[in-house]
Length: 318
Picture 1 (cartoon, rainbow, N blue to C red):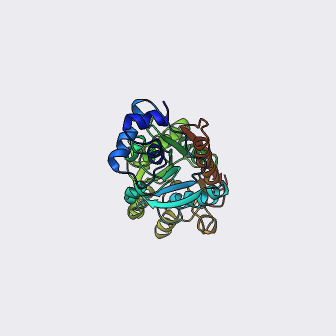
Picture 2: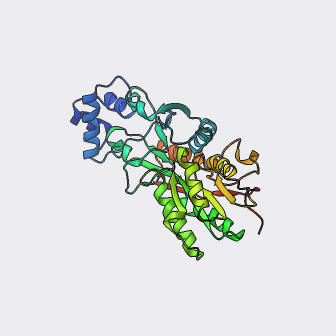
Picture 3: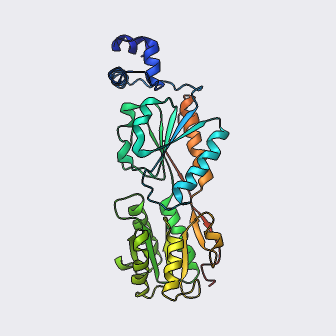
């Protein structure tokens, strides 16, 4: 199948088909839909233009994270790495995706987006989409995944707490069941505690948004925990504040591990031990996928990178 054959079946010129695949804004919607339908029917995958270097970065329109959190740190890494590879970036909030029909781009990357929101991506766009920091339950045509290894990250933090002598570890997962990576983290934490013979109970693994942290920390303290693990969100800041209100000292009374927060974790009192995604590695993986697709080379549908442990002073020495 060639562009000329698709043009004949669609009743348009080859140049029009080419403009459809390059997402030229001056194409009528019915022509775009007809060309895409024919290309899907005949399993035609256009080779992306190596000259087209515009990449759209899709960000949450209502960020579920605080400032300088995962979303922002991924965005910072992308804005450093992709221009080094010769790509031009356009930042687009997810509630403004209709703008995609009016711009030309060779790929898109969505930060912290739910896979179900993009399950029909390939039916509308011929360029690749990279979902960052999310796992999909099923294969999505045209969609690639770049994420951190949540199971390894939870194990990394809990192993450090256990090796430091902690035996009753409370955990607060940012968010709620069924959203983001919350369920993966819950299962990984429970498994890590079970492997170490620590009695895991529903009351010691909690979900909470920022507004619920103070109350949740109070509930865990009533269970006489000796450590607190707060993956993702603003947990490090909020947990330190809550523990101070309850008269607990870090790490003398409670050891604490949170997720890395730029300009806070290393400057907290005490500096906080954290787990952190490999943000430069994630940005490089995104660039690798886009470069492979634009050059016609195969690219992995899923890239999983390990978390890193940054050891500071919020975990007591055994």
